[in-house]
Image (cartoon, rainbow, N blue to C red; front, side, top):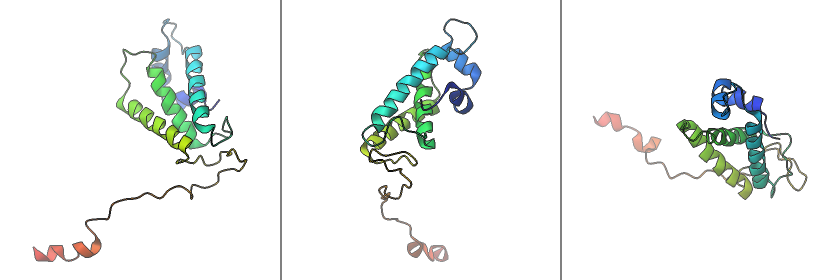
Length: 150
């Protein structure tokens, strides 16, 4: 298990909102069965994405993987009550988390601290591809002296 209900309430959804989203019976408490089922779903998603590159379950859980897991489960929790629209940040974070899982499975996002299938622990992200950007239009040399003309 990559995270617990406590991780959710400490980092993503406050207790009252979690009760509102999971308590269909009106008992006034978090329905832990529903939340734990969603946690298991997210665990399976993560294991599926990581299984080709890392030993699963990934342990210890890298902070970036915890963040991905929490973003996924938060969206799924809102899905329990489709009449309640999730905040835009929840939707955006979910989309990013799904993309990050794809990047992990493709080897384009390294999980620092995770144990690779080879048995080696990933210690740095230095072998990640460099970010490519277009050539800057407004360089120091091109901009030098432009204020003097006016």
